[in-house]
Image (cartoon, rainbow, N blue to C red; front, side, top):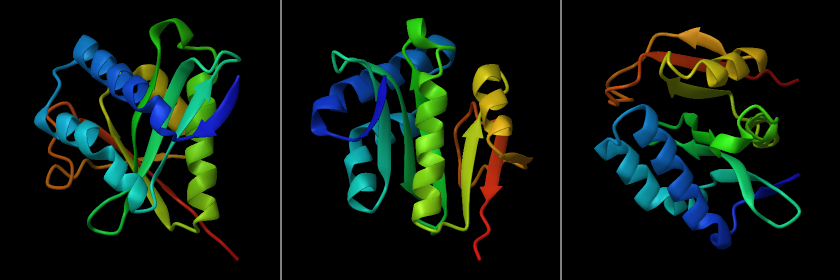
Length: 155
């Protein structure tokens, strides 16, 4: 397994994987569709998606870090293909997003999730994210019932 940044060849996998996991656990909301239809704009604005791929270039997991209109940054659309959940592929993608944030010297990164996503929540906490109140104005997803942030300090 290796971690690679976004390439157009992974576009379909990114969209399909996210549509699938969201539809299986929740309802695909208009905000999800907007992100999935326009995620390349976030990359053009400095964001990035990291993919865990196997030796055959098959996508195992992905995680996106993207700028928000208010100047903050968010980690979103974090998922692993069902059969690869628990293999470390998702964790590696999340760590790549954190390292990307540090390279860009971001002050903080936010994540919005749902309490049913217990594996993801465990990974967020393990990687230094702290629970904060959900700002429903910034994150109008119906399923958003837990939020996290990680503040970075630099010398």
